[in-house]
Image (tube, rainbow over all chains, first blue to last red; front, side):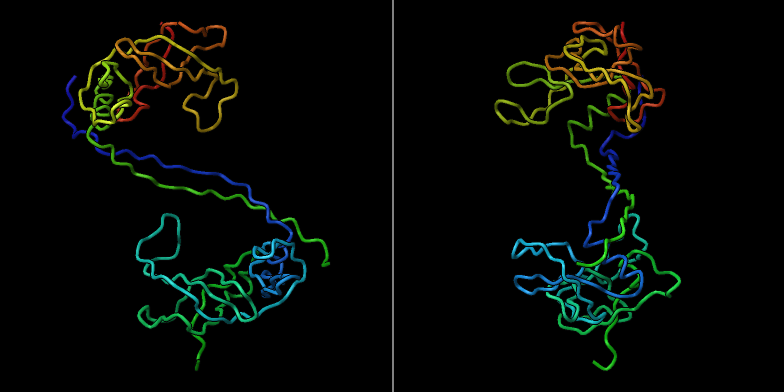
Length: 154
Length: 147
């Protein structure tokens, strides 16, 4: 049997991993708070570092964290990347800016989007503030913050 | 200590849309499957390896001599799957088996659709059941079935 089709040079081999994720105690408290529009992290009893989102322990000291700390929705860009390649299933269209943002009062950056600024104007050290979605859209997700934008007048 | 946290769970799916380039050797193997032909590769010690290895297991030299093998063979070992999962290629119980194709020296991992576990035995003869719509994939062999 002959076949006029082109020789095979590639194959599609998608891998789909199905997870049932349960947030631990620390993350569940964080998500319950952000549902109310508050950002709540945890402070390490050893080194006093504040983590957002909290993981329930301090990776530096290796001890459990319990004390809850509400922090600001403003911070500073610690690093960023401008993404030009679309990700399958990602509703955010490139180019977009993904940034590590160190919220005021915290000691470890969290990853979020930066928008409302031309990409060429973004710099490390830029002050940013959260842009919250309308309250009726809030859920148990960090995406209640649509993105961060430069602090006006900063 | 704060009050008990809510128990929050959520299902999510992480998908990687891999497209793999198959290279000169595996590409020819898959093109052969699309024509319902199975090929192995001849290694430096004369053995025929199916599916073809791109590099020699002993010398690491690139291999390129494809050798046709039969679509019949012998089960060398097997494991019965009583309750297939959603991603398995047969919806009913089947065996995963190593099948040494006639003309090959190394067995191939595939499915055997034997109907019932009692029909399975090491040394049994099987034949490939080909897909109705071969498209250049190992699943062009839908499964093997007892001869």
